Length: 338
Image (cartoon, rainbow, N blue to C red; front, side, top):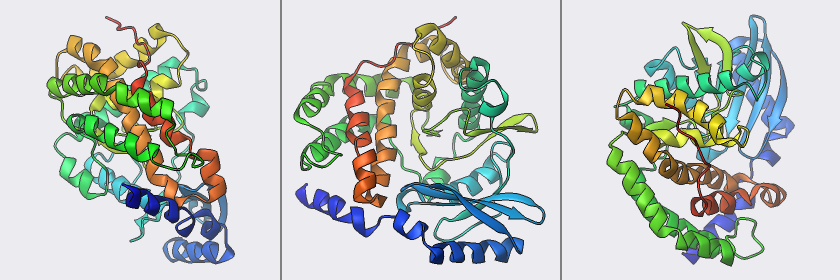
């Protein structure tokens, strides 16, 4: 255990991404690759975080976007290309994906949030979760291809052990490390072991297949311009394979604190998945699924932290214990709507 975390701690500065991504040398190399594909371009860096950098590209035939993720999430380009083959109406097709995961996308137009009344537009939220539910359904049976692209699988049956191991890992970190799970949090997570086991058993008993959890699903990650009547999604670097309902955690967490409102949005997703199982059972299992869904968020945050500088870790590292501690809390209340 100590060896594992010695590796985690030493990796922070060795693999930090932003010092490299902000250099002229990096910009020149990226421009060279893009211009091999598009000809002369104008480029500007629009995002610089430890987990990814994004560049706006202006070419003779229009706008494009170049993106590189940190190594642990470099699968996004390959995953996007795979989805463009499997569910072509649901994502943009990359112009190219480099061996190291850097990829180039055409411009997809405005996002739903910017044209449908902003973040409080419940109809937009309902549409986002329903359409992603359809993506999940269309990808059933494609798990080997998705894991082959590099996406982590978190099957419900394995999560009780996963939670216990990760709690011990984070608790063993130096208290000065932002990722440290303090004594109170650790005790709460360990006390929740029975609740986690019950949740895992309930979700597994529903018998639904693993599904692609976008893991950061919101109306800012869906293009408003329809393609064959469908929204198209992007920003898939946080994705995991998990229980299908896990994808609701992020959308429901961004809604007003009202169980009726959450129920309205959850219903849009339930209406898609009730074609595969009993609707009452979906509502009954939803609180258990939302408890386990915190594991998906924790996994995504944890895997990007060895790409952070010390300063970035000080800012973002708390996300690791925060999301793990969420499994010990009561899930967001959602009022089922009939």
